[in-house]
Image 1 (cartoon, rainbow, N blue to C red):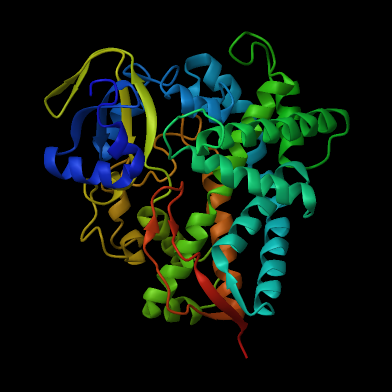
Image 2 (cartoon, rainbow, N blue to C red; image 1 turned 60 degrees about the horizontal axis):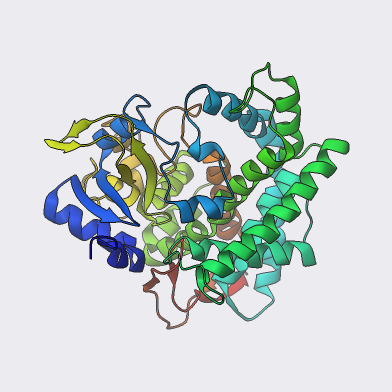
Length: 422
């Protein structure tokens, strides 16, 4: 079936698809997915080729249905000067000063959530983590407070992210059609918020982006003009998607602390702060092992070779994230959870400049996720609050992943009882 190629097994479980074929063919293989001739690459060396703009471009890289869910051309689909100009504007929301202003908001949201969970009996912790993730990203970036509108946004982002891991069948009632409808509702809200912040700026992330756009020298953006309200709504949408899916890493924090009581005891025995090396090592190891998104999309700008395989110009190029940290990475006993691999004495992540790239490789001014530090701070605050004041129990349940979701979710929703430490 030349039109489908290997789309069905890829769409059903892209993580398994990648693992199986990379195990068979090595760090690179050719395929045909989502109607595109495709090459998949993995590993730190592949990351270096992937972020080389003279070799791989982002314009036109995403399959149309994925680009539709992002709503248009935002940072992941820009190249060259257009990307650099837009990225400089977005990074205004991720400066050290901005992160310092977000920290008390993040801490307050996490502490309120734990206090609520501790008095609620058994909870579906994954659902609660989604609520926390959307609250943190919405409150820090555009000042939206918990309530009905935030609940609707969370529900719509849940629907939208499911659209990434399904076939692009745009018929009434299909997951993809539902995802498109959720996208339209989301963008309507975000466009309104951009207009409101432009008229009455505050100290949130969006206001910082708007000020960065105002101060930036022309030309800015793809067409030599400052970003429009629609452009900024798309960038905000991308930021919220990236911030929302951190719930998958919050769930992984709980799972790893449960499965590794020695790591938990060690962290609890220390006076942890956000600057603690042991805490950062733990968070980085959670990031390294947690499946969040299967691939990053690119398109070959010109013919190139990798591991002896020729990639023709115009092919879709997929850099496989998890295999680049595990099977095709540089780490010792890579499947094992071991935060000490990030310690100064071992420094396994420094064996290659792209050895650790959970949110993209290269400089922050390139295509690496601008929210790298934001995610680290969020995960660290969550871990600190959990270990300082709470304990938990996970009753018998299914812990295997539902791979039809992005990020993959444990099937029983991580049922739990959260309790205050006596």
